[in-house]
Image (cartoon, rainbow over all chains, first blue to last red; front, side):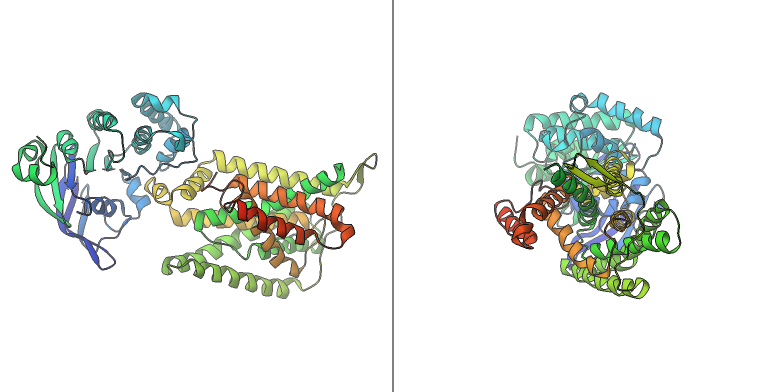
Length: 237
Length: 289
């Protein structure tokens, strides 16, 4: 569904991605793990068109994706939940969610999706008229995942959904991601520093270091891999 | 007392409309539009041309001003601000560009409309008189009501339309809005066009009461900046509050302080300096409402 072929990406003169190749199949959940600055988020920025790539190719459903504008990419069904949540702080929860459906114009369909999102995250229904800035971190994370679902994506990109979230809510979010990929048939590309969580809810994973893929494979196998344990699971038992 | 409040409301509504356009452009593009006053004057002259010279009804003058300034704003964004913002990493570049456009528009206005003060014949005759406590010509009342209706329309548009929501989203978090599929270029152009259109509409409204002349552009820009500094930059409620507060202060100043000479703006500036020292972000200062 999505493919990277030798993608290089630079910030001014500093490289962030140095010949990255990876792929993601329809219906899969793929995790990208690695330390801060390894290039995980740069991969998402390259997909969404927020950052131009210098060389290589990104393909999506058989077509070339790189070079499209962020707005075009959303219309193709790729929607990102950005790092740090990035809610629209002074807009109501309802308006935040409706912004997610910005590229759609089927009024009845939007109302239906809104209902489904509120069904999935009942807390949002309780707070539908509240300003987004008054929500807790966990609620905001639920809201921005819901906002992305409002676009009815085929591929959902999640950038550090557990960052800055209370530990007991991290599980809720992990569960929500699993449920979404199962119920909606959405493919998921998950970027996480919480490698254990990412590996436990994904089918496959790529480990990155200094802009390169250093390991890849089945998530279950990677969880038991001694190299992964040493480098990414922080020596936990 | 009633008279002072009524004058303040009338003036404040015009000012709030000007400030709304300025704050819209600022919050969407981070551009300080120093040419805002010139756009206002231009709108006034367009209305004058349509109504006084071509003899058309006032409503057509109003629509013509809105259209001409809307198109002008869109073109200025597309061919001047967009390339400069793309190539430059410094805010000063757009400030210089805006100042340049202000001088350019002054020259165009001089060329097209001349240096004379222009007005249009009274659009409504008669004077409202409440026991000599409140005297106000009907045309002023009409223009005041029109301005308030435009403010209400603008708020409703920003609050409930899809485009309004997109512009609020862009102002609150540009990157997140992009990730929702909002085309930044397109909405910057729409926002600039709307800001210019608001300036033009106020010009068209006020040409019926006070007339316009070439020299009004610069001072109007300064007043508009005062308003958004009072209210807080890039907040809708701030622009409206700033507009009405400045209108009220002028109204009070002109009737209370006039016996001490022409000191109204001296007092307003002094008050503003003290106020900003205490609350530099303005009354409603936050990213965007």
